[in-house]
Image (cartoon, rainbow, N blue to C red; front, side, top):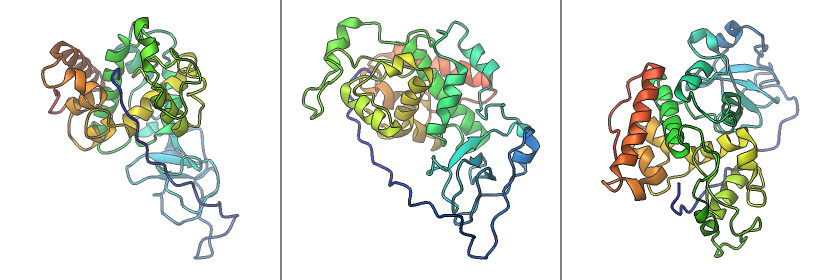
Length: 304
């Protein structure tokens, strides 16, 4: 993500005011599935129903097959949209992992045997709630392919999750766009690449921070000091930004456009169309390796 990418985010409307303990229109409150230590309760949770009242602690199965737990009582808000009310809930009885992520910690360690200790598996799984559609949409194969694609691109950007910050310090002063009305309050050279997809430029720090509820424009060092925040910025880009491409990397994988389209959306202007085949090959090789570890076919359209 070295090239200038103008972030254009469309703001989600704020959640409407919370109804206060009112029963459903039928006069009955939906029965909550209590959170239990074993997976069987979660795996047998009822399907989510829009407009139905859920008490805090209720566990539901969403339309994409993923499970969510109500953090706060609500009148049936959409779990994928209303992140304050719902959080992803793990269900390992059907072949998942204790974290609920399609990549287990053992598989993560196999993918990144020499990673920097900063990039923890726990930091990654803690960040997943920021974008719950990530690696939970579509078929089981699609979920694993998306996770592998995201991690393969992170692998390339960071040298195998080794580098936390951009290595070419001469580039640091170049990432301040003074044409932005908010300027560069952290300093001219403060907005260099950081994290799994190397977030750079003041406008990207501003956009990511606004989306995540963090002051990344004023304190971009949060990305290199907090593993969960670092992963969240990468997931922000993956799920919301098209970069030089025509779709987000998330949509590329979910809609069957293939791994090659994720490369285009991350660094296509410098790598795709034969501009840097060695870099593309590096990403593709990692993706093939990671899908092998996850036991899933990599699919078509691997190149850009």
